[in-house]
Image 1 (cartoon, rainbow, N blue to C red):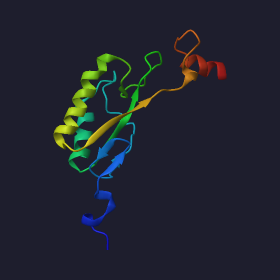
Image 2 (tube, rainbow, N blue to C red):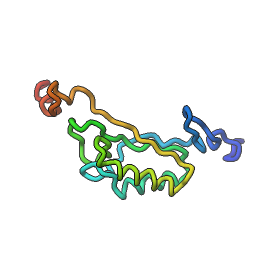
Image 3 (cartoon, helix red, strand yellow):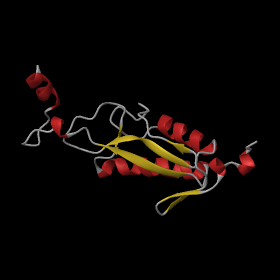
Amino acid sequence: MPTRQNSLVFTPGRIGKLEIENRLIRSATFEHAATKEGEVSDALIRIHTILARGGVGLIVAGIAWIHPLTPAPPYITRADADTFLPGLTRLAKAVHDARPGCRILLQLHHPGRQVITPDAGLAYEGSRQAQA
């Protein structure tokens, strides 16, 4: 009978050059836990530190908005300007402090070309109206 001691799940793994202490990977989701402006919040840090303390080997942090010319929904983590880097750094540090062997990475999210006009304006609402 498989046990934690002899289970493949709890052995180290690799993704390219990235070594992970076990094969427990938390997939990216949309936590709806950043601030309304997209900054890393204390709630977002709590979510990820709980995962790290629980033994997850790799956390794929929820989708992060990366295009400054598109309308970002509220409460989504943003990575579309250098101003968001201190919060993202704080998140990574909190995870590593909670469990030094835990890895964390950010899933980048782009809404697609349909929300950007040729003149780089915001077209999300305009594209909806054009389709109607």
